[in-house]
Image 1 (cartoon, rainbow, N blue to C red):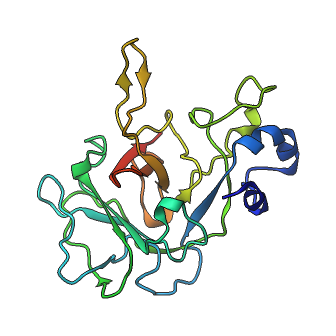
Image 2 (cartoon, rainbow, N blue to C red):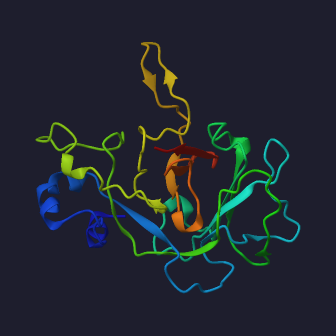
Length: 258
């Protein structure tokens, strides 16, 4: 999104006019668009294609439910209707739905690829709601809730984001910029770190003994917050991050919590 369109978006809810004026040079270098998902709090439409947490995902009649490494059905977490999103990252344009599932060892395994599944769909023709099979572990979702997208807004990076840039006359991350990165479920924007900078893949040690990001590190695309209304709590107020390698299309998942 170009700078003129970014400037027209609603500011971060945490950004007051006074702070915006003080941080103007920093904001000019560190602003991106995001689209936040609101869970509950409105009259649901009942549309099975709507975004939701813990209801019944749309699937093809002959489509197999995701199975984890233990041979158990994964638990459905969220369905995000990308067609209804008023803004989305370029990598998600042209897709209709994104669905996320996790297995019982999702956290313990460090988000091993065999403990989660992502279904990215280009259209919903011929898809019907599918009920969750029996999930033998404690359920991640307490109650299903429909969700809806809010208007796109400005988002800003955390202090440990490697993409964060400092103006020439600003030697360190400004105190007033803490909290400007949205921690809610959202498309795009910046990943809201809870422990350290988001890294989907293990860093690689170079010949000088320095640790460098993996050359296959995916592009962050969205995050799924702990959603209290749905009873979803990633361990302790955590966030799950989804990234995709633009060259291979391969997904990666990472989780952080307090």
